[in-house]
Length: 361
Ligand code: 13P
Ligand code: SF4
Image (cartoon, rainbow, N blue to C red; front, top):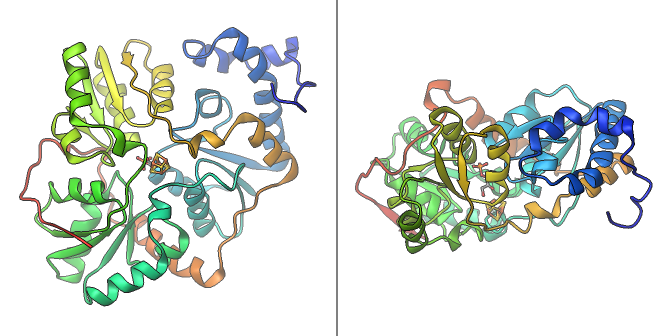
């Protein structure tokens, strides 16, 4: 326990209040860790009620956050939808900065807090609004789709957002709407290449990378498959195409979780950020998880301690310039408003192999 948190004791009251949560996470958290975490979890949960706050926790949060204090958990798309729906006065984003900005854009009247303002994202910092303006000059008349892993200023320059869960559907929808056969899809090169494998729409892409997913290689997957021949390998579409090529399934974090919960594989490997497997494992006791571990340094900046301090001191507030907010909201809302049938719960990148037409900017 860091300095300043010593007064949080594992009392019988705390033990009783957190027992249902303990039962959920005990396969992943040791009793020693729990005795340190449970008092903070209890304190956070009572502060939330006192302040009319909710915590939106991304799938990459550690299990004590995800299962212990998250009111809504899920992928970027699910959390964005929840931010728009929530009645709470305060939203605490247990995730990275672009997610908090998206919440603010969708819920401008709420106070949106993030426990650490440095929780960034290599994809979000790979492109600026000025870059997008130049791209639009270079490709006039083509729609710009941006991944939600971007700043609000970048979203404000774009026509519609997408997440890893709906990128193919958004690209096809927007191409139909604009009557074009090419779409600009920013900023993740690998997501763009993986989308291109599933559609006949030509894709113009930027060279942004997720520093977590770009580290996986096809050789890693083949090595895992050789060591665990019965394991199902599920990979995130931010991975290089060669990784998805040798995986059994590809999808957003929510789609991977859904795959495990519905198909109940005996053994599984999640090719994504490391905490995700811990969180799904708490809900899937009959599945064995093989655990290659790449951590997102930005997601890991969010801790129980700084969530507690966030709620206690109402810090750090995430704000977005009013004009930027209005334009960014139009792009995010355009995604949310897409017909429900066009946004399936999961999709399979591996099975679909169209010609790949990607032009890198
Ligand atoms: P999801 O949209 O799949 O939750 O992914 C967000 C993210 O940051 C992946 O690295
Ligand atoms: Fe960004 Fe990658 Fe971290 Fe997701 S895992 S927040 S895309 S750096």
